[in-house]
Amino acid sequence: MKMMKWVSAIIVAILLLTPLSIVSYADEARTIADESIYDVLVDRYFNKTAQNDINVDRQDATQFAGGDFAGLVEKLPTIKKMGFTITSIGTVFTTETYDGWTPTSYENLEPHFGTEQELADLILAYNKEGIQIMVDFPLSNVSVNHEWAQDPAKQAWIKSQHEELVQWDLTNLEVQAALEEALMQFVESYNFGGIRLTNIGDADTAFLNSLIEAVKTRNNAMYVITNEDSEANFDAKFAEDAAEIYRDIFKNVDLPTNDLLKHIEPYLAGEQVAPLLMIDSLQTNRFVLDATEQKMFPPTRLKTALLPIMFLPGVPVVQYGTEIAMNGVAGEQAHQIYNFKTEEELVDYIGNLQSIRSKSAAMRQGDFSLVENDNGLIAFTRKSEEEQWLVITNNTSKTKQVVLTAAEIGEDKELRGVLSNEIVKQNKDDEYIVVLDREVSEVYQIIDERGWNIPYLVALGIVYVLFVIFVIAIIKRGRKKRNLEENTEI
Image (tube, rainbow, N blue to C red):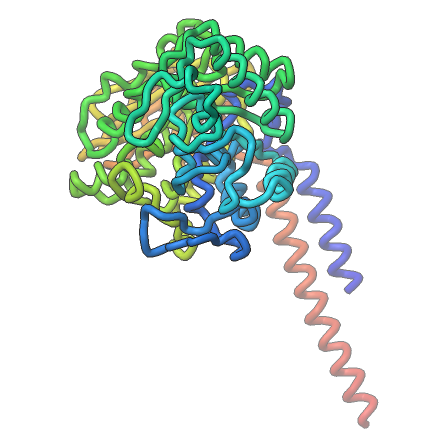
């Protein structure tokens, strides 16, 4: 035992003296560009308690399925494993539909989802794991049974009614004041990390900015975004066709990629508002539906699409169920009950990408340079003063190569693949040539060429020698013990 402890101590000492290639960077003040968002429908995630299962019917996709706040707490490890920093749980007010999109109040919580205390417990549990909770606040399109719509004194607030939904007159000063008061009461009641204003309709920019300013006055660190096009001062910019663009690029191979940077270019040009990047949304068809219609393999399509989305400048937004290749047409078919019995290959894949993104300031806010963009072959770099990365997606039907010059990468560098452990070094022509098979993506860290890792090899050699000495010592001790036992018997 003493010998083993002695050997272990020497090994540890050697390894501690061996330089490691792990570098950590201290974050400055966070912005939404540092975040990634996981979109959830509370009712469709996980049913933890039966106490709030009021007329639940899991066989009817249009009805409540039983998911609740407690269920989100129960399955927190899955979301944490994927590395998301914001979980958006949608609308939580009393509602006539499972998705929360027909609210009947701006104050009371939906009983199917849970109590005020359970919502507070959910926020606390997620905050402890470094994840913020974002909720939706609809400015219009509420149920005809909404408490305001049922108030005779507020009938002038209604602009129109369509299919059991009421649209408020968002130009009415009384409506604006009431919405701001309701929003602030809601924000002050819980420790939310973000608010998404939905159904903003014909609300003018001045009114929206007033709401944003009111929230920021309450908590300047709270993000305020929307799911509609707007020129107001939201923390992130939504584009109606963003998901459609990325679906059209990645649903099959060899597709045009001209619009890859359509909504990113203003941000690169100096606009302060980061774009929201997604391959689908809770209001659209699932990305997997498009891929299967193209007779493509969904997991491969998802990996191909998600990798660049995670590292392009902007805020990645991923819908619940993407990690299990959820399919479906927009509406309840795309809002299936989450199946936790599926394989976690995509969960691990997303987690690996997020681990890179969370540890690298350059991957979140570093300089961006497009190296290649040719019908599925996409390559770009992200750089800061401390680090440099290369991201490549070969979304084509053939093996492709990307040639980078020393002017682009630097002299005497090497590219280390994070997902494949591949190493690419500068050739005699001062070029770095990366070869990727079809439908394969990779992330390379660009570092100074290491050559032979002498300290590591020396450490490895010493460990081997010490192990041999240890084995010899054990053998000799065994022989000595046997000889002593034989002499004792005689």
